[in-house]
Length: 306
View (cartoon, rainbow, N blue to C red):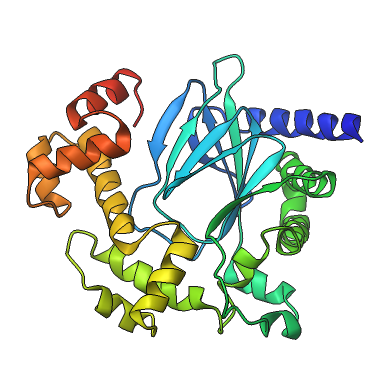
């Protein structure tokens, strides 16, 4: 079995390498699949509007290693794992192993809510999530069966005529395996009416759409149709952050994006993202990214990370 897994890993890495001709994220002829490639260690934030909450996905690092910082947690994953993301959340990701000779290669496969619903039985949809909500991002083991299905899907890039018929079938097979894997509940809960996640998503969207503005927890709890205590508990279970921490990450990640991509000073960016005090902004930025904004910009521009 080890030889079979190793062979499939090498084949998948070769396919992704051949179909990603430059660094960065690239779409493919299969709409649900995208690749990312990095030829050097890379540090980036999951930023950019809109912050979608309707594209559940899995991420497979087919070559190299990645770390994802999610709230107060850090996930490390490589070719033997896959990352399950039931919604887009503010994250910090680091490419740990990459070179021009052996680039870091990642494959993303997206699913729709309707695809998830199609694969769930009536009984599965009736499962109650009144207890603990599932985290919106988790790392699972990539077994031989799942790896084989992913390779068969990516192989279709070499046979474009087969994509319209076979890609939906292979994608459905992969999703089925994810749903019945160790973190399948994180996808089930985003389409199950009784799940608190449905309501928490509404509050998340409210924060995302207005992250520059202060908010009242009571108002967010009303949007989620929960008591304040229940809202706090479910929000942190799903996002690994409190609402204030969530907003702070959105603000700091957006400020980082603006500092990299625009000619603007630190104080201006601080006010743009909702800070009243540039001093507080610099302090919180330094705490999150490890250096002051100015030092971070010099480092990132030197590495040409944009």
